[in-house]
Image 1 (tube, rainbow, N blue to C red):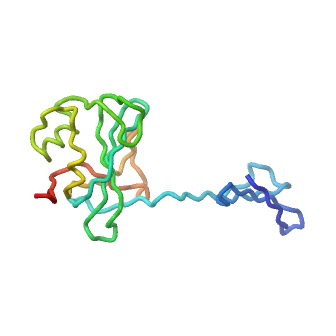
Image 2: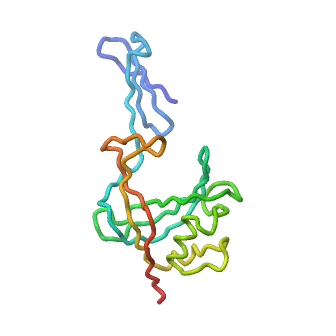
Image 3: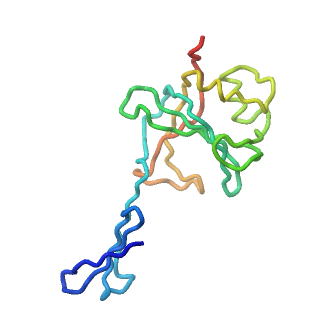
Length: 183
């Protein structure tokens, strides 16, 4: 953290802290107790996107595996293709999996829960009966436009506590069908 000395209005010098990217400025004065100031906090994340609940066209991007405290998930990323103001925005669809077979991350290996898991039922709805449950055709998803149902998340995943209106966001609830571009 870099420290810069700037003159204060009362003649005392204030210290201003900057991180390595010159962001998140925190000002504090030597004559004020540490608990007496509130730092400016800026969040550089993308804003939460909320779109009306409906079925929209998406393009598949990639998947990644992740490990949460008590569950393992497959996160599939899709790009919205509807031509609206949110065209090109990224949305996520979550699927529970039994376990990870490689470290969590992009294109990580995993074991699906069972033949009746949400992931395998969804893939069979899109492509018909799968010969093997461990051979999911993710590469076929890239060759088509996927129609998916979007829902608005209004409660916390932890205790179903309601989220504030500004914390609502949209995510993909289910993949409905696929239009293959090759056919």
